[in-house]
Length: 412
Image (cartoon, rainbow, N blue to C red):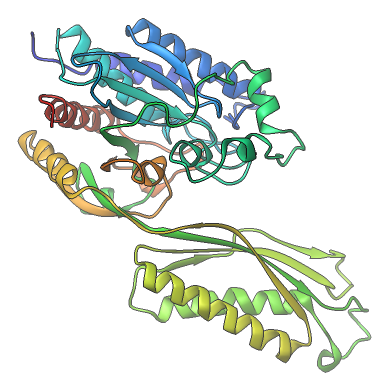
C-alpha cells in the first residue's frame, strides 16, 4: 500500500462541476430537493461514485449511497456524507463539500491499495435544506427513524408537488428501507457557514456539539381599519403586535449572557395595503441554543410574552410548531481524533459549536458522530458569494482522510 493522498484537482473540479448543475439563465444556482436539477446532480454524483469503484444504492426516501465493501464485509460501515440539495440562489460548497470530500477520501484510499477493516459508505441525504419540503434534514431524519418514510414521502411541497412522486419522476426513489446500512460511526465534512474560524485564524473546526433548534409559526389576528381615521388608542393592529415580538426577542437575547440566538425570518401582513391597519400578521420564530434547558426557557418566555401581548393589544395569537430538535453532543473520541489529525498536519484547530443544523445531528441518534469544519470567507453561506479557499478545502479533506484511516484500521 502507498500513502493515500487527496487529489486536489479532482476534488475541486468535482465541486465546480456539481456547482454548475442547476443554474438558471442569470447564473443563479438553485437545486431544490427532488427537482430536475437535483436529479441531474444526483446522477453526476452517482457517476463519480461508480467511477471510484463504489456500489451505488438508493433508499426509499431518495438517500444516495456509494458503498465500498472493503475488509470485513459483515462489519458495520463507517459513513461519510452530507447533502447536495441547495437553497435558492446558493453557493457551491454547502453540503456538496461533505459528499464530494468523503468520496475523494474513499477514492484516495482505494487508489493507494488500502484494505480498511470495515466497509465505508458515502451518503448524500435527501432534502437537508428543507426549502421545497418540510422539515429540513428530512432524509437523515427518516434514516435515523425520527420520521416515518410513508409520512415523509407524502409531504407536499411549497409548489404543491408530493415528494414521493417527484423522487420517482427523477429516478431516485430507491428500493432499500431507510436505515438499511447501520453505521459504525458517521463523519461529516462541512464549511463552517459562520465567521469564527476565519476570525480566529484557525484552519480546522472540531465540532463538539450542535445547537438545538425550535421553529414556530405565529399568527396574530387584529382588525383591519382605515390608517388615517382610526386613532392609535383604538387600533387592534396585528402588524404592531408582530413588531413587538421581534423587538422582544432581540432585546431578550441581547441582554442574556448565553449563546442563544433568535430570528424572525419570514413575515407577512394582510391585507398588505399601505393605508390599511393589518388585520393579520404571520411570522416565523427560529430559536437556537446548544443547551436544552436554556432553549426550553426561551420557548416558555416567548409563550408568556405572547399571552401578555394578546391582552395588551386586543389581538388573538396562535402558535404552530414547525420543527423541534434537541441539542446534540458529538462523540468525544472522534472529536479528539479530528484535533489530533489537524495538529499532526500543523493546522490550527478549534473546538466549536455548530450554529446550523446538519445531517450529523440526525445520524448521531444511530451511532457515534462528529463534524469537521473549514473556514467560510466572511462567514457567508446560503449565498452565491459563499467561498472557502481551495487550500482549506483540501486541508479539511486531508484531516478527514486521516480520521477515516484511524477509524477503519481495526474492528474497533
